[in-house]
Each structure stands twice: as C-alpha cells, then as structure tokens.
Image (cartoon, rainbow, N blue to C red; front, side, top):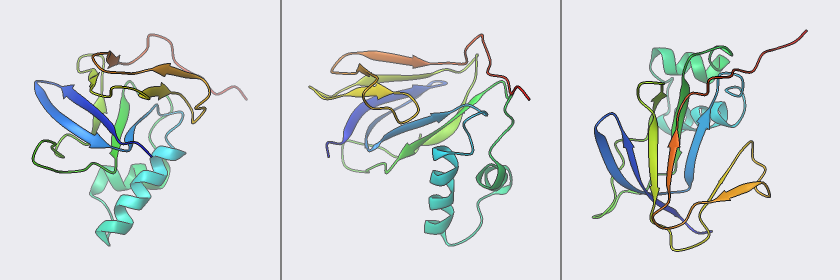
Length: 139
C-alpha cells in the first residue's frame, strides 16, 4: 500500500500529511465508514470520545446537516509531516482543500468504489465543500 501524501488546508491552517487517506462524510453517510473510524478512535483511546464526537460515533449526524465531517485515516507524524489537522467540519464558509504531493497513483473516489475514481497526482488541487443539492430519505 502506498501512503497518501498531500497538503491539507482549512480555515487558515495548513499541514503536510502522510496518511492512509481522508474520509469525508455527509450526514446521510455518517453511519458507515465514518462511524467505524470514530469507533476505532474510541477503542485506541480506551474510553468514550468527547460529547458531540461520541454522539456521532453512536448515531452518526443529521442526514440533512449543512456540513460534512472529515477524518484523516492513520496520520503519520514525522520531521516533515504533521498530525494536528486530522478531524473537523467542512462548511460552505470553510471548505477543505487538498494539494497532492504524490508522483503517481493518487486517487479520489466515492462510497468505497475504487474503480470509479479521479486521478489525484502531484500538483492537483481538490476542494471539498458542501454541495448545493442534498440527499433526501424517501419513505
């Protein structure tokens, strides 16, 4: 497996990362992979997570939320990489920006479907923000 290498930027903060990637979740998808990552974080910590984060771990977050949540998978600290900007909200006012530092094999994909991907190689920038359209549950 190749580590993802990128510059992550949000709200005036910026770090260089080496990780297994980033999960960005809508409220609609927050009871899947995102929730399992929070469960893993609680297991590593050996106790419940702080208030609202624990609630997301147990129930996800509102399907009609006006934000996204992101978490970095397995961030690796080193002399050239940081691990402070690894969890947070993406809003219309504070999008998440990623700049690839991978010479090759960098990808962005949705819902775990790796075959349906966008290339994300050196110098490419991805801006993740809240869409104008929302998913809705139909009974």
